[in-house]
Image (cartoon, helix red, strand yellow):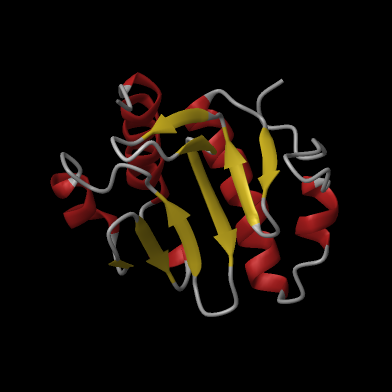
Length: 141
């Protein structure tokens, strides 16, 4: 069932245990809220990727260089300085919703939010859904 947080991920780490270990109370609450939001947007359960990324779904990438692997199709990390949300294909086509999102910063494929309450989570959910659909449909060759 989408939204389950007690799923073990790639490294055998339990998502629920990871979230419980987030020391900052507000960041822990925000992470639980993001699990629900990402599960709704992707239709996938939360799984850990690496040591600190809560991921949803999976995609296999293969670059022209021959490098290939698997990664979460959507995900986030409740980092101390900001929530880091991963958009694997970047933000092309998401300019309009980003303009309505609220205070955030970005890098090539990450969106950084200092306070979840400061942004429009309906807009964020739409962005996650659109990004996820694009990632799983993308041909990586």
